[in-house]
Length: 243
Image 1 (tube, rainbow, N blue to C red):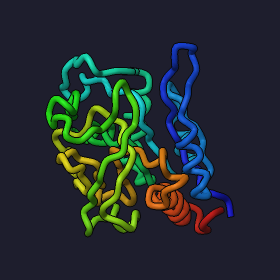
Image 2: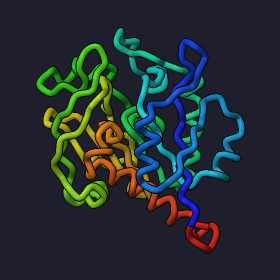
Image 3: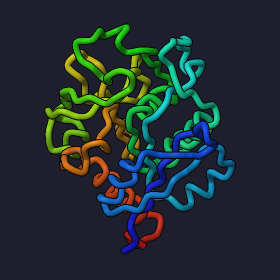
């Protein structure tokens, strides 16, 4: 049986002109039994990507251009990349049209919300205070509690409704886009996960499961479920699962 092929868009070009992606995303996909393939920004042939991949994982890293959701030029906004934005918005629109199994992480959650017409908090601490740290200065991850709605698809995947997870963001969903259901929150009310119930398999979490998935089976289950959904989605197209 051939493993599911999961496409992961990379970050934009760094100061050395290199596309890059933290290895934890790749390793989490590999542990699921799937095979990752990196998708760099600036690609014109998205049709070819969709002929190859069985699922998509939209990773974190950097902020979306605030012009796309009517935001402000807050001083804490960083790593805005128009090339990456253009590629990922185009990819996500294809996901929504095609029903391709998809997982969003951190920026990926924000990308989904903005694509569907929602908005973001420009800098979360300005709105929810500092009772809960969603990242440590200057830009470091930190754990906090998550509570998942017990009747949600996400709760079924994770097998738990309360746990601690690594958080690493300064923005989050403000106005929820039409078609998305909020299924998890932090103790301060910050939206931590959404799902699109009219899509075959589309979940997005604001925390970073890849950072602890190697030691935490609850977090690894997200990647395992993506791989399983990708294989299942391949079956109707080929008539033979795994071929």
